Length: 230
Ligand SMILES: O=C(CO)[C@H](O)[C@H](O)COP(=O)(O)O
Image 1 (cartoon, rainbow, N blue to C red):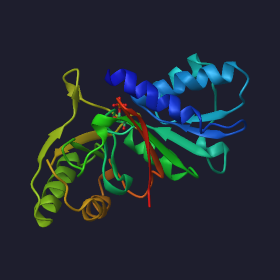
Image 2 (image 1 turned 135 degrees about the horizontal axis):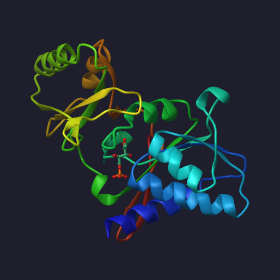
Image 3 (image 1 turned 90 degrees about the horizontal axis):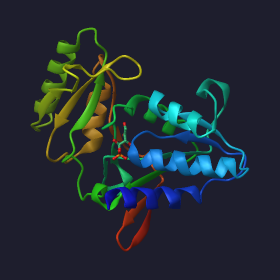
Image 4 (image 1 turned 90 degrees about the vertical axis):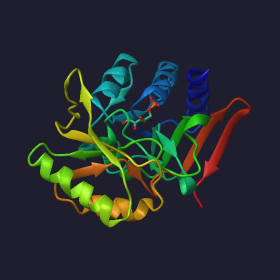
């Protein structure tokens, strides 16, 4: 059922693709549906070029026959289509469940428009039930963790911090960094948290995507809802 909804959201996003577009290609299971459907469109003759947000998406896009380029080769992307872990008020997002938040944010910020696609389970009243990914450089990672914990307490919040592990080892992002997952339960002021996290030297990026998504396509059992940021 959820996979069906993810596909429906991706199908709705395909309608936004126009010939000649430069596209940011998101990461995750919902974004993968979009890449697969885009592959069909390319094979039907539509001419686009994509910038993938992860090695996994690059591989999938190549398998689908989608032409890829690097962000350094172009000025600006027309549209980025990506999934999310949570979509809150004003289309504020938590992203990075798949560990691609850094490239995802760089690509979204370099796009004229970011379109988020998701199943209805991702649409929430407040952000924070999904653990917030915080990407840190390996050097001094314990000091970064302490600084994150201090910030959280200064903001009057509480969160459980856990290093992301895969296969018994620290999970490594495509850029070679590591991730702290911060379980807040509720993030009452995402802007204040985002500002504070960005000021910590060892924090490369965090999964709060604020003021980036312009449109969300949320697939529900009753159809795909379109939300636009005010
Ligand atoms: O941010 C992401 C990866 O870093 C994904 O977009 C997010 O985790 C949603 O994934 P899925 O569509 O598989 O639920």
